[in-house]
Image (tube, rainbow, N blue to C red; front, side, top):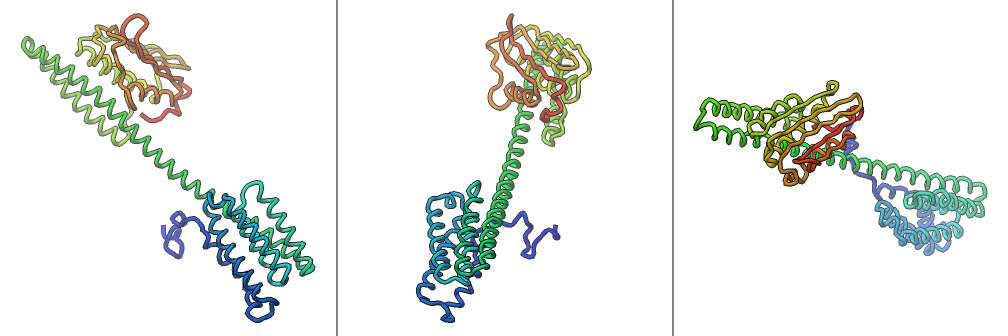
Length: 380
């Protein structure tokens, strides 16, 4: 870390963007003209002094406006440049010599303001103008003046454009970091909702079953109570895994839990599986679908039978969870979680999720995933 820090004690990424103060030292190019004024070598010194003051004032105003996009693109800034050009031409024509060095300063001001396609023609035109005036006043020295004007304008524009790009990239990186944090928060809230929703539903159902069984079959009631303890312990483990971001769903585990929850709720579970073994990411996504669909069935359906069908091919896998309950009365969880959240997860993996009343009776949830698109799926 220490070798990355500047002499001032700050790392490069901690330093702010350049501003108008970075361009002020170039005014020292006008020291020759100022020296001639002090030594009395300039005719009409009051005119020269006033011109020098006006040029410096316009230059400072322009370069400070150049670092704010709204001010840089404002018509007033263009008028200031026109005024600078007029003053520079007047001083160069009237005095020549060291006063011709105000053309490179004018080029620097133009390069700090003008962007895009207008930059090249503007700087070339200004360089040609500087060359013509310097040629009249200084002969072959006009080449240096024209070249200096061109270089100062183009290099300044390139450096400032690069600085703006770096600043935009830095802002984009910060925005991406904020977005990543928001996505992680959303992932955690969805996982926590699904975990607790399913677990609490199973606990409620098994508690009701234990209450019904206790008066006539204490052993069966104790089995349900033991299951409640097991579900609670497993929920604690899953919540810890969700917090640390390492939880990987298991479709086989979710199917076993679905059978247990449906049976406890008095719903007959029917599970059918066919097709090749699934990739871990595929199983994780489908495990969430089973969990949410069965939780809704236990909570809302009032069904007597629930079928879970898994069909797979080398290209695509389909999971269907359907019951013979109330159908249209089942209201999936809204907001950023539940079936809506699962729809977004599967869509990100190139799949789809449909939930609604079954064509015959009850409610149906159908999920489809293309096997070749699962590598891009977000973590559950």
